[in-house]
Image (cartoon, rainbow, N blue to C red):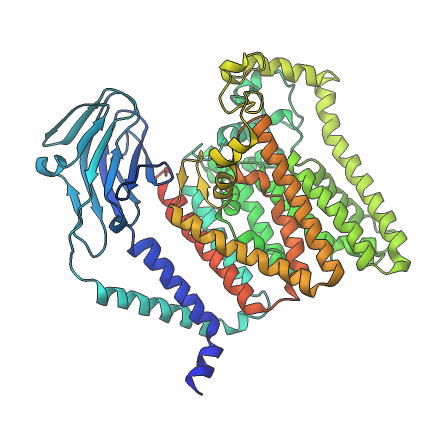
Length: 621
């Protein structure tokens, strides 16, 4: 076999090996690594900014780590110091004292920048809010006169020992492992058989994140935990102004118990079942979402069509992050995905029912599908856009895929199913009104006024409200929201790997890498549908763009007119829509390029989840 034929035969693992090698060089070999030993009396942030020659510092060019009194040693990555002329170190964010015992910055191929002795610490020049800095045997004692003390270091790298042969060994090892993996998994690479392998890895990462991260380091987890804890000993929703649930209210004066979402009930009841394992309470409440992901995994194992549709769930670590702590978003994503599969897959329970492939007297499918529909109707408001997409998709199927003689029956049964779902959903809504009466809205407004923090109270004057509220009324233009405040960029980042209370994010190069790969994957699917899918494929793609665009516009408008929040999870109803789109495009496009792009997205996501999320979030160990 010639060299050319060998390369063609092994082109995919070859491309993947080059990709892994590039990622290794970019994210590990060509970045500085910081080892910090610091002592602080209170919780704060340690920030390191970098700037090139003649350029200023920016919050987009920084690394930060959360510092705690009970912990002294920290490790995190910076950027490539060969492109940096100076570093600005902000050791804490309060007026007071700290002790930096050790600071070591290493970049492969160069001598380390070490700060342990007095002479070494003297290289850090005070900029602002530094009252005094004195060195003794304990380290550098810094006393700040304000909330933003700053030190500056002129970066002067010196060549260190050569790493050429070590790098060569690493690259050879990467190529060897990739080719060995492909050689041993030949039987699992047909169609979408590789998808379960990726899901196994994701399940392991989710479980680790849930098990080792401390309580309430994830977005708003405290209110989710409190809401789920209520249902450990209750079955009916509470009165909205019951003093016993005051601790469940957020700073906005809103409790998750006053809504209609279902996952808190299931989370609380599962936690009861896990009591014999003596898990920490917050961990037992997190296990419902871990269980959800495991059930999702079993479903895609059982259904080849679901494996095709599940691929978009692998393109972002933010999707996996939802399953690692207590929240209601994971439930919404799973319900929407199951609804998408039921409408899309030809042999699904729903399509069998709509096409009269199940016995008329068999009511169990109708009950099961009705419960799924009811769950969809009770999700957060942003999933209304997914429901809109499904309604249009149903019409699209009637026109292009359902035989003319079956269309009337198909639509009739769909209407019956919607009615059953609405009836079941009304039971949940009715339970709230049965407990609270018809004046529930008035009571909600009253308790919000009572329990919300001052900046979020409805009665607080506009000038005293939180600056992120009601930006339009304050006179901020939509252009300012988009251009100056970078709404799209921040939303994109928080959809592809921002952890904690939006405090842990990757370096710019990660987002700048995953963005074009994601765009290429999206264009591959879109172009395939438009040019190979005929009029039906083109209409489906345009409809997907319309529903996605309306959802994005609604989120942007909410940030402008109500509350400026650049949270990518608000846009996650796009994911199950994309699953539907992918299913119809997959059989029309070439496999290698699609698999390469999907694998690249997955690998980048694993990097973010492990080396950003897991590494930098506070842990119980």
